[in-house]
Image 1 (cartoon, rainbow, N blue to C red):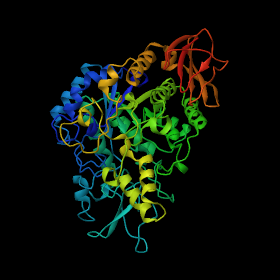
Image 2: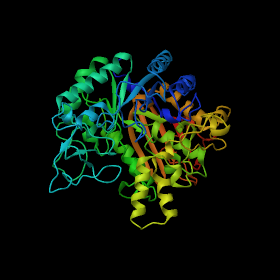
Image 3: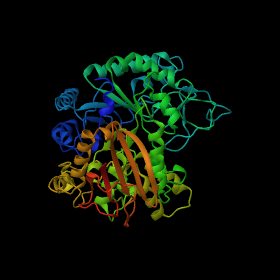
Image 4: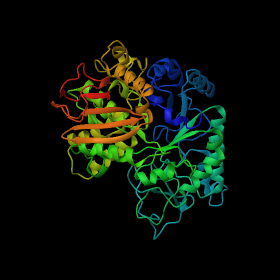
Length: 532
């Protein structure tokens, strides 16, 4: 099916925290196999699986030591193939995580690369001589500290935009690009349907800049080459993790005529509620800006470019804690879902989002596992500007671990995730488990099912034109229109009532409502899909 991404509804699985079947406290592929019927029941038709490749685990699997294997803690390649077959038999496609900006420092390529300056693999990575006895430039790594690590053996620095155990690949080397294309073909030939491409706009570096980052001069060339060598022949879907893009730049990357990526994530709205985008420095959420940014991207990506609709993933705290209201957990979680997934684009739902999970409570640094969080804590503590209580509050607000605690399946110990000791703390709150929400008609889980079912049946919601009619005083109204049919999406983004906006037709048919009534008053965090 050409352009199948336009019909995609994607569910992201973080395998380490999904379901553990062997009691080692780590989720596994057999756990996913056991939950395939549940996944199908949500109404999704695509799964994005976070990395399950062999890895030392410095960055929870995003430091890969073997691109063609399955990590033993997750299972075997046969388990993977059984999972893939199980998904396909249920009409579910699989996206794997493609992490090719960097490898682990334990990948054989890097083990060889650091042995000597004339090793055949030396140029697989980015090595530079010291400048005035120091780092080659002032680039800073995303996880803190310099982006350059000195290697005593050969007297040079290697580049790592993330952890020092994640050396960056040198995409200017054609051998590296061919290795990556061969690996991509390996998985696509096995039946994988596409990839989520980790920090993909970083693969081309611009060393003339004073700061580290992507969108270098050869980015489009590299992506087009990979598209031609591997992705296009398999009709594979790709979605790029691309921080810092404008809509115009995203259009360039995703135009069908160019043959690069299928879609890109945009995260501009996820930077709100953070001072200068710093995830550990909170500020009040600008709700109007939240909707305005979503509308900007809706209007900016048109024709053959398709937006990605995302509010949560493994790198973000829970949306309910960031953008919702814990005094109105059901209402605000369902309002956020109706607001975002009523828009034109491909829904991406992160495991547990369909339950309206909120952030767990971390009581000490010892309970965190995320390298970014631990490094940020230590860096801020060394500054001497914050008390222990303030430091923990900052970590609680921004840590990636907030979205990584295990999936709560039932009310038993550890939420039915494992019979052993979980790799990270579990938090099981009353009313927030799959078991409880399955039984409750008015649960977030069943609202998601209804929402996704309605999206599929209403043409205007699938690919209709977007138009923002109102976004003020914590109330938003937009329409989706196609072939004479119009759906109004009405959302109250506050814990107070207000009059129903006059632009909303009184005699409309209710397609979706997170309250029982549709009156002349919008209730706290009420969300409506109305067909005119």
